[in-house]
Length: 435
Ligand code: NAD
Image 1: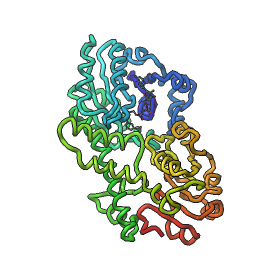
Image 2 (image 1 turned 30 degrees about the vertical axis):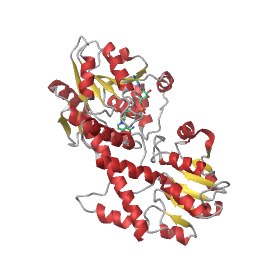
Image 3 (image 1 turned 60 degrees about the vertical axis):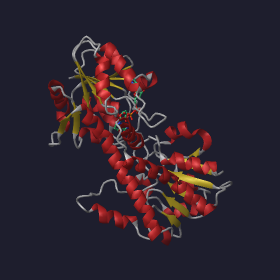
Image 4 (image 1 turned 120 degrees about the horizontal axis):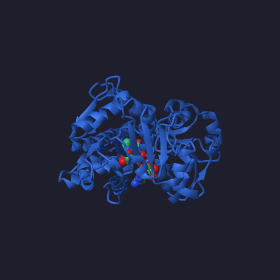
């Protein structure tokens, strides 16, 4: 099948590569000419495990090409996927300008009956609006919602083996095409769920807001654990083994970030507002998360004083989560900002996200590739991202490098008892008090 994918970001590129891997002919379009040039040369523009191998094979076998020209991609395509960004606007509602621009470009390029698939996360009512925008086209166009549930850091794996595929459409033929496209990925019996466009739009927001709810809930429970002297790890295991609750997304930390949870929780709040249904839980989830991102700064100040002039802190982990270079809404940004505002010097390190964080924080912090260089001469180590390599770090080397053996572990990567035995002053999140 010939497929066009508009937007080659974390979602569009992964979708394009995986559809090509399944034998389709895919044309990926992006307005960023530099990025298209790099992808044509075989460069993978994002860090995503496994993506490079599949991308290179698909390019080599001529099933995947890149262009900046929408018409080249859309001409003759059985399905046109729109996977451009829908970032959070200034008042919390999704900024739809990229989707609208892409739809306008697609409308001009359509040369026959087509299926336009909204893969971007879009507010309820978008399919209806897009259908109206495309109504002027001379050809019949079905508008389908196919929200994406992949996780950055495991995007390829998630795309190739989804838990479910959601297809929102009232068009039988469009549904059949979507089912055929996804067949190679759901052969283990995972469902392709057909529903209305509005239900599909809402499913995506509600899913992310639900996951964010679990995280914020556990962050509050962790604060309570610190207050009562209980270990949140015990509480988490005690809760997560209940089959009705399940173990996923019960890990407390220094706040969630990324391009999805904050934006989509805000998106749900906004959809509720536009339909007159207050989303009070989602509002609380966001408020708790905003506070949680400040927690480590508060703790550093409680330990070292409100004025951090002359102090130096090592930040381990800049990405919003491990196995990605994405720093959008990363807690590390809030923590670095808070420490800088109090006069501290911050040294950041990350296996993948130094270039992306440099674009955000510029030279306001120092960047080092080696985590042990980051702790050299620092007053404390602050862990913001649970990269696997940090779990097995040489703790004695860290202690020797720090000016004071103080560790604020925002992701609970270390064991409190071991840290204490090694002479660290250790604070995890909800690990049974501050000792
Ligand atoms: P991204 O910002 O990484 O990529 C978007 C790409 O679209 C960019 O390369 C940009 O240059 C390009 N673009 C913008 N306007 C264009 C146009 N008119 N024509 C062609 N290209 C255009 O975004 P992303 O993280 O891939 O997210 C895309 C959508 O998928 C969003 O709605 C997001 O909420 C959703 N989503 C993201 C994730 C994730 O983990 N990143 C997961 C599920 C869903």
